[in-house]
Each structure stands twice: as structure tokens, then as C-alpha cells.
Image (cartoon, rainbow, N blue to C red; front, side, top):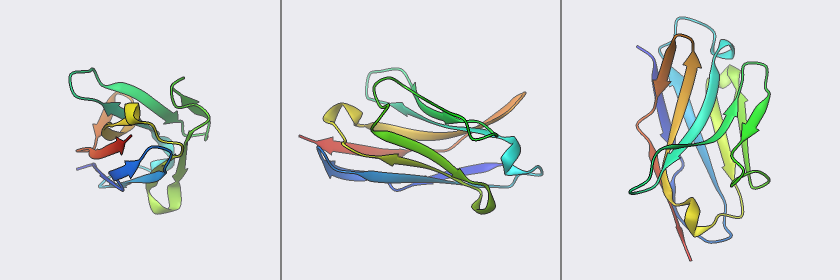
Length: 117
């Protein structure tokens, strides 16, 4: 059973940084064949895309985080990261890791990020 487990969330002041990690396990296929992404959901709002990285390493970002956040992957460690810099109060949300290998998609349980002003 494929599992994605996020870590690294917490409370940080505006302008600070956090690094989220997502460890992937239980696959019967190489991790480098998966697309990976980070999503977030703030209270009362819909889940939204933050960043994606495909199997070839190409990335895509939401406009709201481009230039501040960086997604990366280490296939040898079965891990995807989200480096978050210059954090803002509006970045406060539960952050979810996702893996995609059509027709299947896999989700983590989420990690909370809270940015105080």
C-alpha cells in the first residue's frame, strides 16, 4: 500500500522559512515514474495546488508562491520537498503531499503550517 507521510510543518513568523518533506513508501514501481506535488487547504477554502514536479524534474508553481517556494525531489530517498521562504500569513494552511501515476493518485495526511504576523 502506497503511503505518503508529510513532516516539517509548524509555527513560523512572517518572513521566515520552513522546509516540508514527504516520504513515500509501499510502491511496487520506481518513484521516479511518479509526478509529485504539494497542495494546501486553508480553513473555509478549497484545496489548491502549490507546486508540481514531474518525473523529468520539470516544475510548476501557483502564482502566489512562485519565487518564494521551491519543490524538489530525491528519488534515491523516495522523498519530495517543499522549501518555503518569505512566508506570509496567507500561506497558513494544511499542506498535503500528492503522488500521481495515472490512473492512480495518492495523498498524504497533511501537515499544518501557521504563519504569524
